[in-house]
Length: 469
Image (cartoon, rainbow, N blue to C red):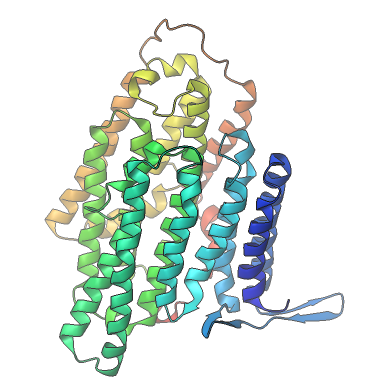
């Protein structure tokens, strides 16, 4: 097996399917699902400097392309860092998945989904990536709607949006051939660009087609939905960058940067405004993802000022932010024995579960990009760039941030109230001190020393040569 595609796409797919056969052995499945992506991420970093590696006098050389049904999947050394990031994400979510009741399919399907998101980045022609994304949505269904439970509205709406995006991307692919043969055809360029943006908007849940996001986070276990949404958000961001890198007609389109800035600012302001009126933490998680998408779009629109270093700077802190939110919400759901996490259930939380409360507030501050936390450096750069924009965009971003602050103040007023006399709560494990302290430390280190998170991703986007110019 001396091919990059076979090692980092085909092999994890087969191993993920093999884990299905041992799903009843939960501990073994979790251990294997943790070790496998870690080894894949480490080996991807090892070969990212070149596909020739000398070990104990032997030279190992990997080929970088593979043909499947007449289609080409090519993974060069420069692109292996992207796979390393995706598999490291899979490792993080499998590492402590045994602490929560995430179902017996999580370990195997998480590995399969990660491998498919890796394949999305490198399939040529790109039309087949759209088909793979639809396949990922279908494979995610057993995690979103476990066996024996009826399919809820959020799952149905999610699958509907993913399916609606497919024909839009396929139609834009049909137009690409016409644009490439006649790049001066302005009508084709405009229609193709609109279809691409509409397709990605449906995929990512961009405002105003985001309604499935809070519905899905309300209906699904926090550990599962944070994994699925994080890898989807990062996978789509990288895929869109590859799209821009490959197609000059889209990259050089007049007004594209301004359109992206408006889309990003609308996501941030809508998330901030809706957060103020939420009474369920589970729905809050959905709007945090909407705001995160908005900031990623703003970062893409700022590549001319930034280039791609800004996106590299924010990817690991963003992943860590979602991971800490998933851990906090899952621990809170387990402690309260509640699937909804309504504000009424959080009254007096500081007195009942002080460690989880501290982590909850810190995780929200981090996800909102507040000073001293790991997301602050990238958010500060984005806000600095936005400050030079038109008044409406600046106003939208300001209102969005204000909404996030008001939501946090409202939550604090709830959890700081005297606890109600509702009987005996579950005892908070003293062992939580270690993970809480470690997560808080990483948040602060990432905020004070941004290179802590950015250094591992040096060269991540070097394969996007056209965007580096």
